[in-house]
Image 1: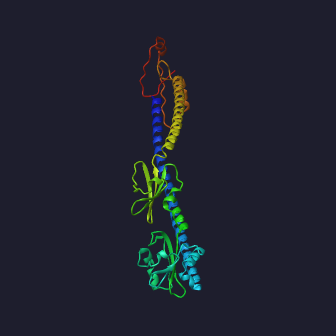
Image 2 (image 1 turned 90 degrees about the vertical axis):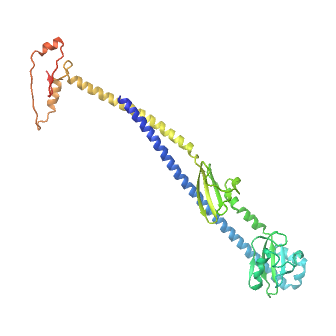
Image 3 (image 1 turned 30 degrees about the vertical axis):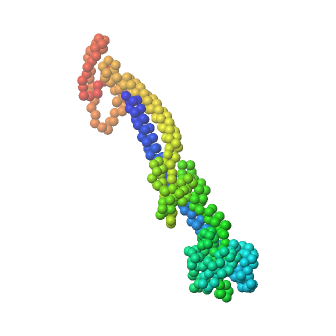
Length: 357
């Protein structure tokens, strides 16, 4: 009966321990997943910030460079006035200064000369792209460089810089096809930046437009352009809004399941073996205790009457505490031997300890 209770107790302990381990592993995995996701979010945001910063600095440096080129061409033409209306000469100067177009614009905002005659006659009123430079008419000290914009005449991606000449009689505008800039911008697009980010198996990173909810970049490029939904079954999402973007880390909820099963299996085997060993040890201890108690009972008890014998009496006398109150009663039963010889089992009822001698 005792062995059965011990076995049931051992099984209960193993089951409870496995349940606790499962809960602990789930908690630890959730905590690790949260920490890992936050680390990835921080990394993505840092890359986006650095990317936007470097892109902005790069564009600014190009704009400054193009304005310098416009001023240099203005100085050249001022020093050589005959070149102002010489298309071939202006094309040579354009090649020398590494620009694609040169335009001369009068104080009304109209192109009257330059390296490309097909643009003659266009003015600041011809379209939105050229209207950007209208402010030049009111400020002779102003220099401007436009962002990459489709030009008015052909909708060709161009970058224009403009400045007044030294005598303030006309404006000099240079146009450049920003191949280097466009290449750099393409490389720095969020879709390309995020796609190159390393992630753990079962994890994905998304950068979403906060307004339209369109996915701008993802480690899985097939998701780019789709509408983001952060409630896919079987996935855990950790997201953070940063400026115009929502950065999210998507993680399979089952990505740690295999590791958890292996860990639970190992602990289960260990606990089972430990429980078996514990049951075996307890069984031996109980067996030894039972045999010891049986030996003590047999050596201190009269087999026929089941009363304590002389050995028990001597043991009790040795252990008697003389500092406490006690009573000693001695009885002499006559003819007991006769009953013993007849094999009669004596029955003695008493409230005190009885000894047979």
